[in-house]
Length: 127
Image (cartoon, rainbow, N blue to C red; front, side, top):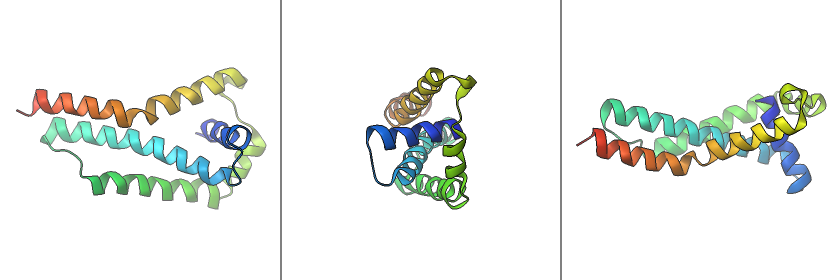
C-alpha cells in the first residue's frame, strides 16, 4: 500500500495541485478500500443470508477505514517516510503508475459493478 499511497500523493500534488495532498490521499485510499470491502461484505451477506448491507453500516465501514488510515499514515508519520522513500513496484515507474491506476479503477468502480453483481446474486440465489 505504500506504493499506492505514494502515487496517489503524487496525483494530488502534481496534477490536482491541492494544498492538503496527504488528507486527500488518505480519503481516496479509504474510499477505494471501503467500496471494495463493502462489496465483499454485501456479496457474502447475499450468498449466506439473502440480506443486503444497511446504508448505515456501509457508511460506517468507510468512516472506520478513514479513521484507521488517518492514524496509520498521517499520525504515525508514515506518510512522510513514504514520500521520502519514493517506493515503486518492481523499481519501475511505469509499472507502478499502471498498477496504481488499475487499483483505483477496479476498487473505485466496485461501487458500480458491485451493485450490478449484488442485484444479479439477489435475483439468482434469493428467490
